[in-house]
Image (cartoon, rainbow, N blue to C red; front, side):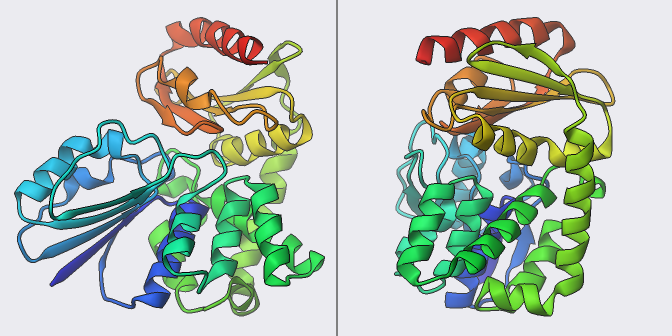
Length: 322
């Protein structure tokens, strides 16, 4: 049997696959990319001897390729937490999709494995900004406050590494980062044994966040804020984690981080108010290339002429939901 592991290049995708492969070791072809590269199944060819595991990418965005791969004879195990669109039913397709706002793919995997590698799941939850969920799971596991702080830091750094317009924007290719992570049963072991990896991410994150905090607010109301970043590598890397930090700091407010693209248009990261984790996916679905989940979503390419319409829709959506 030939195995292919397909995973999102952020903290959730990485930690989900680490858990699975610690529990079920196997040699597999790795298919991943930047966080926003979610049409990962398009370049895969399959036959009756191929089994594909898919983690943390939207079924709605990969529906046609799932159908194609099943027709080619592949078996597929699909685990995710984004809106799935139409659910496909097939004898060779196993689906575990939960769209509840306080879960992520790594937590779904954690349930499947009965908490066998829960520290990795907690790390992913921190990375996906599910802070309360991660803290509760950590307390139940008996982790101390300093230990939880360290897992939170790692989760944020792994998530930060996934953002960019291309792999060249990232500090580490997610496939290479997975190879480093899978050696360790615990994220604490990873941090100790991969000090240089951790230090590179920490240094980059600190420098990029310092630049982000100098950005001016472009649009602000009581319920929503829009920030526009320049076409710079640091801006592309930090857009998602900065949105999370703003959401944590102002939990009653929605945030949109809009980053200029080199060839025109924008990339958009949306965070719903932390105290009402809903509406982000509905908002971005009004625009081409929009997708995500209730609490956090994005638009891969927003044409310049649609920026004003987006800001208006953003303001109306979250003022209405308040």
